[in-house]
Length: 43
Image (cartoon, rainbow, N blue to C red; front, side, top):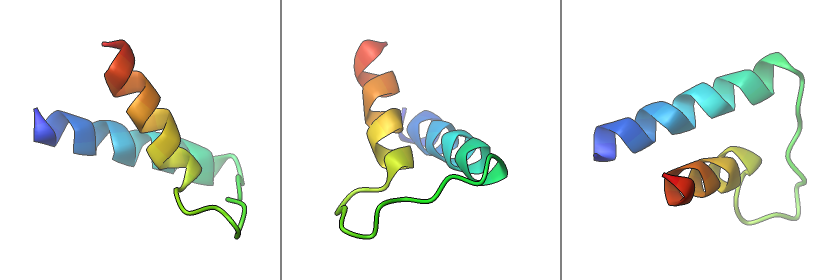
């Protein structure tokens, strides 16, 4: 299961980077981590 979560994170992070997304420097969690947490919780 851990490998699947890591794979989801990498894919989400790559998509965000490809679209030129920048994280807010004040945040403690990256947007990719937040989206990954959401996707894993939904499943």
